[in-house]
Image (cartoon, rainbow, N blue to C red; front, side, top):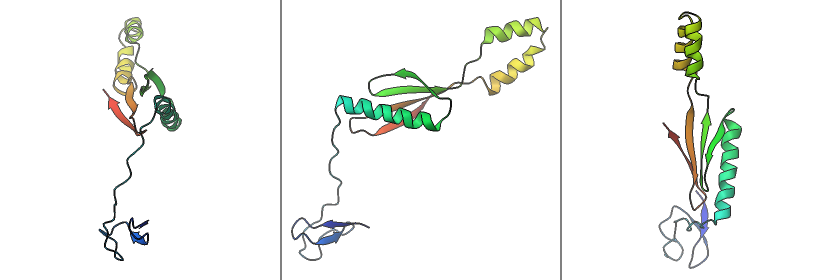
Length: 127
């Protein structure tokens, strides 16, 4: 619970109260409107959010960078041509390793970071 000033009498009132108990004036509990950021501020906020996410996630890298969004990826795709060659060269024995890598390690995970005009950033996974 926080205290706010009554717009009429100026006394401290609980932010949960529908009106001032001293003068009866309605108390506005709505948040003030957010300031719209300029283009440069949005780009700076995107850079901060990328740095924040990449610092926590280890081997992540920026794959695509737009003005107000970035696609961030982790992992490496398999080189299927190399594994096909190794499978043929080892008379099929490498196929077990290839299958294991394809089902466990050969994935690339991507998500999209976006910054809206108010500086709020969101993430969404990409398939």
